[in-house]
Image (cartoon, rainbow, N blue to C red; front, top):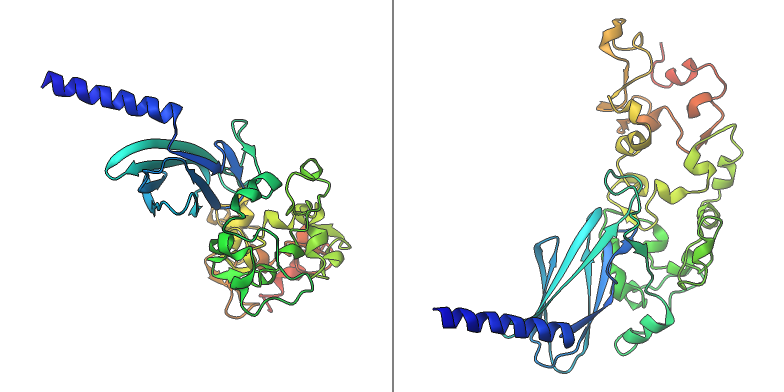
Amino acid sequence: MKISYIILLLLVAICAKADEGNPAIKIIQPLDRSIYVSSHANLVIDTLDTNITKIVLYVNDKHTEELNITSEKRTYCKAIIIKLGENNIKLNTYAGDMLLQSSKLQLYYYSELYENAEEESEEYEKRYFHTGVKEDKCKACHDMSSNVPTDGEAFEDVTRTTCYGCHEKMMDTRNSHAPAANWLCLDCHNGKAGEYNMDQQGLVKYLVRDPVARTCGTCHEDIEGWFMKEYTHGPTNDGRCIRCHNPHGSDNEFFLRKPVWDLCTTCHAEKANGKHVIPAIGFGRNPTAGGHPTKDRKDPARKGRDFYCSSCHNPHGSEGIFLLRMKGSFTYGVCQRCHQK
């Protein structure tokens, strides 16, 4: 028994040494400790050992995928879905049933709208794939020169765009934004920087200007009018449309990053008790009864719609105080939308 145990330890030590000095695979993308701003990440893996038969992928300790390796192919890629905050990725590489290498990396999905993911950790940094050196790795299998139309006319078969093959999972949402749904990627990803991301200019060829409002305004012509309103909302005033909207698509209406009420109360946490305005209106004059509801009701002014924050407030801009859907500072004006008597 002791001899068998010693042999086993020796084999483990030999494998560990081989892993350290002669790795079986090399992860090209993503690099360890990378920041992402969406739930989609693409793995690019080089196989270095001709004996490899499979790579088993785990995302946050969950068995996610098995890649079958052949001798005819050296580089493999796979799209994965990551969760908000920290993510642990593990790749186990096998030759038959023998484990050759166990590789680990951590990714961080950053979003300022979600608790525990709203701050960029100093341990992570933004890194980009679409650079000359990394794209060269993919040219054997992929056409890395964008064939996305720039005249606004989308391909009838969107799978013909060179972006589709790697980024198709991005469109697995209930609602899709027209430029993304038609794979007109270069309408927004034009490589230009703005005031808030000037330091990223030249780091990646498909950069998007930040603030993005000017880009959004090429299609949404009413954006300019929002800036002319007497009262404007912070994200609108800063031109940061994508703080609230996902420019590719969302399971929520209007491509919002959260359902309306959840989105609003992320910043306006004091309204998260579901009651608002003054107790005397609508639900009794008892001060302990709370105020006007902000959710879980139907909207009398918009048939078939639920009642929530934007029933009374315009989230972009208004001529009424508090961004109310009215003009002037006499707040009861908005009440008349629903309360006709």
